[in-house]
Amino acid sequence: MTETQTAKPANASRNKNRAANQAAVAQISELYPETFNREAVKPLKIGIQEDLLADAKLSKGKIKRALASYVRSPLYYKSLVAGADRVDLAGEAAGKVTEQEAEHAKSMLKKAREQRQQRAQEQKKQAKQTRINDKLAQLVSKHS
Image (cartoon, rainbow, N blue to C red; front, side, top):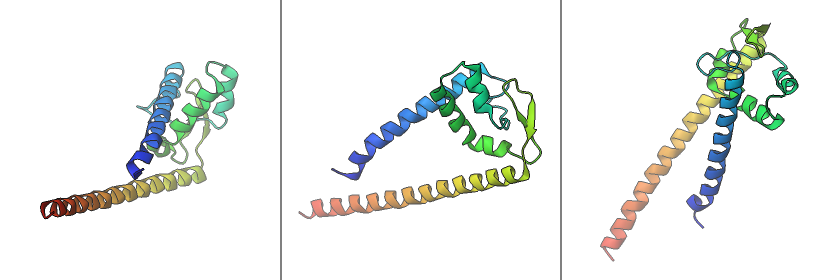
C-alpha cells in the first residue's frame, strides 16, 4: 500500500470532521448571532459553555464542537486584544481580555503561521521529488 492510499481515509475523516465543525458553528451562529459572528468575531465570555448548556438549545456535543472550532480560528485569536470586551449569549459585555490571554493568542497565531509555512515547504519538497521521480521513470522507459 502506498502513502497516498493510506492518507486518503485520514483525509476523508478530517474532511468529515471539518464539515461537522462548520455545520455546528453555523448552527450556533444562527441561534446566537450577537455572540457568534464570523464577520465580527468577538472574545467570548469565560464560562460561556456552561451558559450554552443551561440554555439547552443544542446538544452538548454540538456545543463542544462549535466552541472548539470557533475559538481556534485565527479570526478569534486576532480578536483577543488586551482590554477588549468579552461577550455573553446576548452579545453583552461580560468581562475583559487580560494581557496574558492576549499574549497567548499572539503565540497561537505565530505557531499556526509557522505550521502553515512548514507544510508549504514540505509540499514544495514533495512536488519536486515527484517531478524528479517522473523524469527518471520517463528516462528509464525511454531507454528500456
